[in-house]
Image 1 (tube, rainbow, N blue to C red):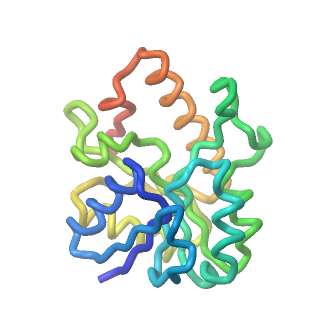
Image 2: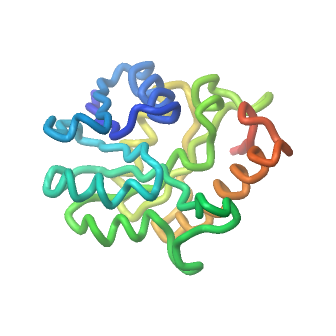
Length: 191
C-alpha cells in the first residue's frame, strides 16, 4: 500500500484522491493554510496551478527529497490563455525536476479533466493517465496506484515527453474553454 500526499484541494486533487483511495491506498490533502503540516507520503502530487509551484516548493523545501513528485500542471499563460509559459523545447515538469534534484519527478494527470478521472471514462473509453519520467520504478509505482483505482496507465516515455503531454493538455483546455468540447469529455486513448 502506498501513501500519497496531494498538495491542493481543488477538483483535480479531489479526483486524484478518490482514485488513490479506491485502489486501497491512503491519501492526505494539503491546502494553502497547511504549510506547517509535514508531508508524509512517498508520492507527492502537485495539484496546484503552475504559477503556484515556486511558492509550494519554497514552502516545502527539503520535504520532497527522496520522494516521487508528480507534476499535473499545464503551464498556461493565464492572462491570454493562448500559450504555454515554458520554453518550446522544455516543460513545466523539467523545470520542476531542475528545482528538485533529490526527487523523482513525473508528469501525469495533466491530459485528463477532473470529471473524466472521477467517472473513469472519456465517452465510451476508460480514462487513461499518461505518465512521463526518467525513473522506471517511480512510473511503475504511480501506474500501480492508477490501475488499482480503476483507470488505465500508459508509460509515455522519458521526462522530456512532458513537453508533448503539456501541449496536449493545453490543446484540450483551450478546446473546452472555447466550448468546442465538454469539460466532462476530452481525449481518449486506446492502448
